[in-house]
Length: 378
Image (cartoon, rainbow, N blue to C red; front, side, top):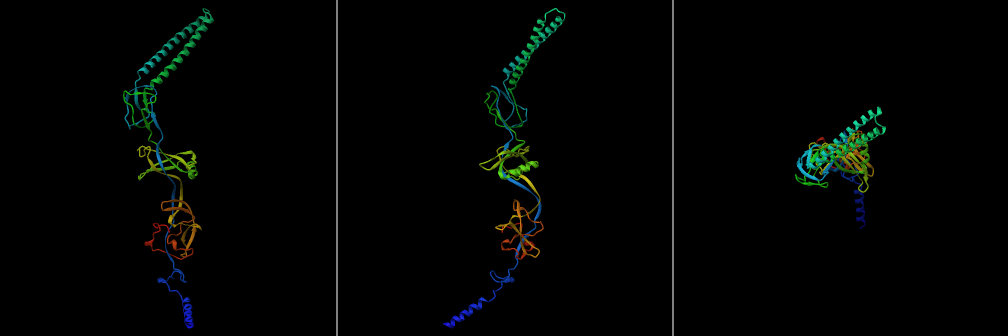
């Protein structure tokens, strides 16, 4: 029994001191005492380009102005001059109302003005003759003063009747309804012969060119918005959901308060809309450019590593080892990101990072196998 134990102990110490077998290709097996071989990696070179910093949001197309047309008098429609859905220009005739009574009142007021003018002319002539007679001492001063008072009274009466005639003319103009602005006509609810009152809705006109898009942005974007607006026109692009074409416009309005409940700020952008690509009530995707990063350093997003040490990338040093370089994200867009902290001439590792340690040897993949720009996150 004792001999068996001695032999077993000798076997144990002999095998514990033996060298581990080498892995194929000359690299030591994992866990072995030999040095690890170089790690094959894919690399990319940072690109230099101008990067537009965008804020994206869903918005709603809203007209700059919409007018509901109502008559300003009670009358009867005699003619409708427009069609539903028609485009009208400012000042274009839309509805005619029965104006016979208004026209008679206007004629009466104008006749009253003519009578007052005739009376004033007669009194002015009497006053002039009275002054001549007074200069020859043929009449008393009191008679001339009376004539002067009559002239002034007649002038005041004339002014009053002229104002009354203008008022009647305004009332008469209510019987002809013209477009207050250019736009598209909505549904028409009256016809020739319809009795209309102040509360009757005739139709509506909606301005389509230019047109607004209203949307909200997080309050954190307010500082950048105001700074961009102070610098000049802020470009905005809008596209219908699923559409490839975009319409270009610019920021036109930033609300004066932030919604304290939702934490958003309401903004508007104005677009030229001669082709009516945008229609009131539509939902659109908006992109607002708050600034442009000139000659920014751009790398794939999957090259960036975040851990307790911070934000960094692996680059290939001159001695073919991996070294860490701290970077700062400036703006992410698509699969790429603009960063600071790189000179622009580095070889940034995008694949193979999971096997790397700072100072570890690396080997570049064959040119035909480089996939850095397509690879996923490591």
